[in-house]
Amino acid sequence: MTVAMVNDTLTRFVSPVRPDAERWRPVWTYMRAQGSDVVDAAIFERIFEVAHG
Image 1 (cartoon, rainbow, N blue to C red):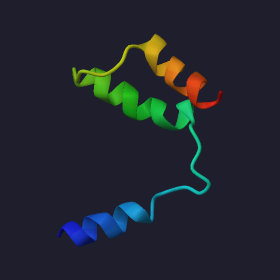
Image 2: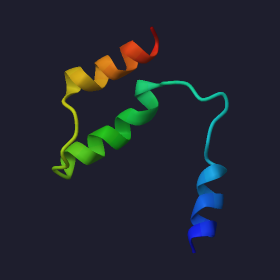
Image 3: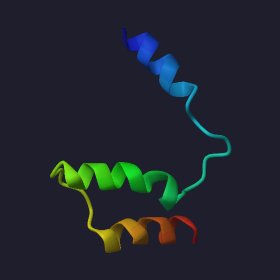
Image 4: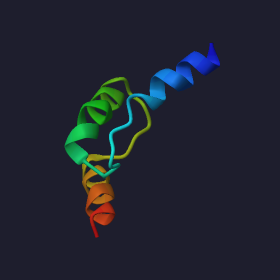
């Protein structure tokens, strides 16, 4: 089962890997809606600002 999960996950990587707030925003929004302990909006945006230099 683990091997199948890893193989499936690896096919989903986008090359080249680059920070993209819009790509991750739906995940961030979902996690916040579920009440997960995630960063606030300002920190989320800052993560991607720093990643872009």
